[in-house]
Length: 581
Image (cartoon, rainbow, N blue to C red; front, side):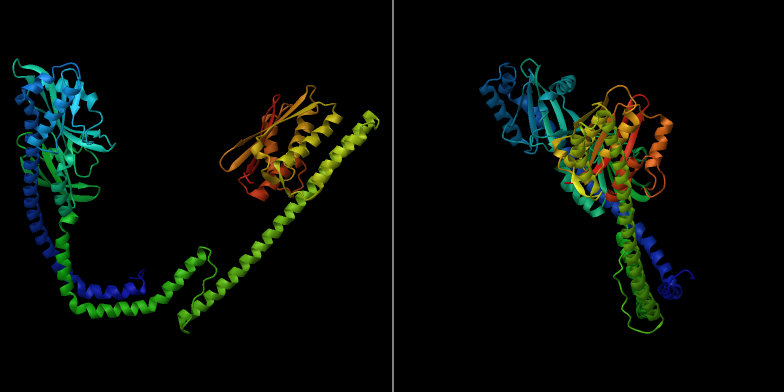
């Protein structure tokens, strides 16, 4: 009782003192009534099962008689022995097939095979199975072995001419020439197993159960749920309990109890099972028990209504307040509790409103602070990259002036001016990939002036990416790092290749070089270094760390760069960017 809320405590007292004796009476009545229902249902299902068995036996008898018809038509027997498939032969056999359908059941689908494997059927209907011509060998072996007797094949899955999945019960019989008893063809009769649906649906709708028919080999001939037709039935408990010609028993499946009523076909040995959920079976018993309880408890209706009304009026404001608190927990800061009275609940609600307003103000303050912090970081990154880049470029100008005695300084200075104008502006200005590559080409040109055209830049990026948007200076620091640490000391020519890959939402730009590469220990150190906070005093890998940090700040933690390298082979730096146009 201590852990119940107030409404539950009020109701619990009433139930304990008044309702408990009533429940005892209801349970006794329910038990007696349930036994009566089970007995009546078993008798009813057995009666319907007998009707289904008789109906299916009628269809089977009809199908067997249909396959016997060719024995009474000598002309048909003669036609089946003609090898050539003439128009006259096709028309004659088609007329015989229509006659067979008129004589018996129009629901039957009739196929006739001649002794050469040609199949004939009513061309005016589209319910025929589309694999019938492939069944000749199978049907021939079965029918000829039976030597003129009908053979029931059981239910098989097939597709008709309209592509619909169908389940057919099939009877085959060989056709003999009555003059010499020579086997001259095969008669095949299909009936769609859904002929039983009307009777079964009526039964299943009443019992809310499931009906199946199993042949002597434990394969399902019919399944009202259409889930396991033509499959082997694996429930050994049900099969083992069905020992007599008819009967019933209870089983449990997945925590639910079922009543299983069964009957055995006397001619074929097939078994019909109807499984009914016990909870559905006793639904009426439960309803009657409830009715008894309601009548018994009628005198207490006003009392319990009073208890509920009293508890509801007390707890309603508290439930509403709890709901508003849940909304605040989910991030909705616009909620307010409408205070009507100055009682204890009103005091709590007033404090809640004040708390929500103050919480909203604090969140806004934190948000603005974070924005300012991010801008400060970006500004610091800009101030970090420009001096580093300008220093290296000025060193290149100095080396050219010493080596070439100022002859190429004008052309070199023009290229350097382009680089400087591009990079000196806001470092996070949005540019296109094409702008970045032009800037990179100018940089490599300057380096080649210094190193006597030692470096080759190969750009293999799809044209569709050239107008893609990105932040400034993401390629040049990586190539600069490749030259300074991987290619400058090498005697062989340096090759730098840039190529692209893509997914639906991301683009990967890979910058590879054939430089000296990095050993595994050093590579691990470099990867750790570029993940450091860019505002720290760490002086290693400034360019790479700067690019990585700017990408993460601008696009999010899912983006950035990664480095792969092999000592003596080269290095590949991968830029992972969102695809933005």
